Amino acid sequence: MRTALKIGLLSVLVLLLAANVFAGGGQEKAGKIKLVYLSKWNVGEVTQEIVNDAIESWVSDNPTVEVERLWSGRDVNAKLMAMIQGGESPDFYDEDPQLIEASLGKAGLALDLTPYLESVDAYDINKKVINTFSRGFFEPWTFRGEINTLPIQQYLNCFWYDKTMARKWGFTKTPDTWDEFIQTGEKIKNLGVAPIVLDGGIDFYNLYYFSHLTERHLGTTAFLDAVNDKTGKAWDNPGYLKAQQKVKELRDRNFFIDGFEGYQFPAGQIDWVQRKGAFILIHTYMPIEVADAKPDDFEYGSFPFPSVPGGKGSQYDLATVVGGVAILKSTKDPDLAFDMLKRLVSMETQTRMAQEALNVPTIVGPDLPDIFADLKQIMAKQTGTFLCVACGPGAFEPELAQTVVYPLNQEVIYGKLSPEDFIKQVKAKQIEYYKNK
Image (cartoon, rainbow, N blue to C red):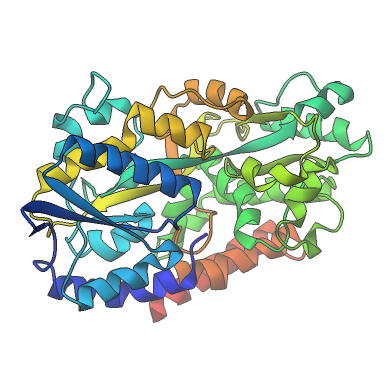
């Protein structure tokens, strides 16, 4: 989860980087080329161990190179600033693509990986690196025509349910359309079970419904098109109102679990895994978070957010959050740096990401663990990838998100604001926000 500290440091970071763009980078020490890998992972985390092993394997194959690994945890931005102030920039920066873009990309300090992706062979697959990813995968991570982050881990968003209970309820088919979703929810509600579980205290989780529905109605860039429009005119498209009306429909039908407004994370997902509700809409990191509370006979099932009548978005356009790695332009040997970086998206490394860290692999091909059996079939039908804009501060304009969009959406979810008033207020407040910025 992104923190406000990360966002607040970015403007200072850009200035420091610009002043130090040619400092640091690959260095020679005791006859060896030295690369520095700065990471957001903590020592002992599963992902850290997988990344470390991949780097160690590459170093073994390249004995003339030394890779210093700095495991800085979620305070990685502060560490980056300290390194820059000390006159040493890292060669690699491990973070989320939006933060990499905000800190390095906009300042022209991140290496454009596109030429490498298109021309370099993958480590253990007979393809160019870019062809090991699904078609269109890099579209959300392309800024100003450049790709400055190589995604190494992925969390997809989908509905989750318990197949064991579904069989008891006579629930034999997952809903593909909004009408089917409503019909299924009504049947489950009539059995005395809440159709949907929400963690009411997590405002950006509650935005999942509206953001998905805007994209199903208007296409994969719809939500970002609206919140990035300084004139506010984008909100006049009736698709946004239709999306929020469907959110209201869920509340009006009493689909949300009783008392969700008072839930504090992780109360909602714990209640869900303990079978107090049928569905939860959340990313693929959820199973590992509820592992200790899961009944022994719980069987994970999943399905994508349903389509809407006449919508421009596809049911199999999947919302994702990724973590990745950038190479700084100041590195002294970008070819060598990319050769190491591609090891993190090898079949071996990505298989470990799936099996051990329970991350969805970023490349096509690795086997998924049993809990992702349905997800594997969903991904086989994937028609597009779009940025999950409901995943905390930093997914889009942070202050606008926290002071305008999240609070107003909460009011709709809580039944205190109509969809019509939501559109009026979000438009007016967004215009004022950008005017004063």
